[in-house]
Amino acid sequence: AEVVELHRAWAAERGVATSVEGTEAFVLADAGKLRRVLTNLVSNAIQAMPEGGRLARAWSAWCGAALLPLQRRLRLGLGALIDRYSARALLPFMLLPLTAACLVLGLIHDRYAAFLFMALLGISNGFVATLIGALWPEVYGTRYLGAVRSVVFALMVLSSALGPGLVGWLIDLKVSFDYQMVGMAAYCLVMSGSLTFIARRVHRRMELQGAG
Image (cartoon, one colour):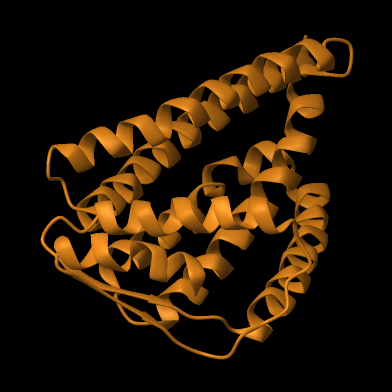
């Protein structure tokens, strides 16, 4: 509520109506860091609505408690699928939950969209973390595992740094957040097609190596 109040005047200037809904909740966290996180979320949300809109801060006590068990169950189920079909066979499906999450943000503007997005994001994170952990040893073996992971981690850090700058640049160009989310979903679908092609090539290569 404090963060929303601090941004209320600026939001009003941009034609964004703000409100605080729901009951207060107790969160065990560093107050300063949590305030910075919420400040970034609120300011980014206001900037993403150049034509005005509505920003509501709400809290659901069951949301976090429901999503964590969902992610754990997903990892257990995905581990069984990897053991049965291999990580490379599941690789083309890795980005589909994130695709759905982006479409939810871009196309649905009801309050429940936030919870649906978080559920899909949790599924995506669980999917990626479990699959990637099994993929590298399966494709490259364990001899160069450290080198492979270091390169992948460096690329992840680079993309994480470029992402916010790209989104901010598009906002400055008056590209709405909805269009950006739909564009990100389309990008995920294109990458899923690329992963399908890559997975087939890796499968053929491993078959040839096994035959040799």
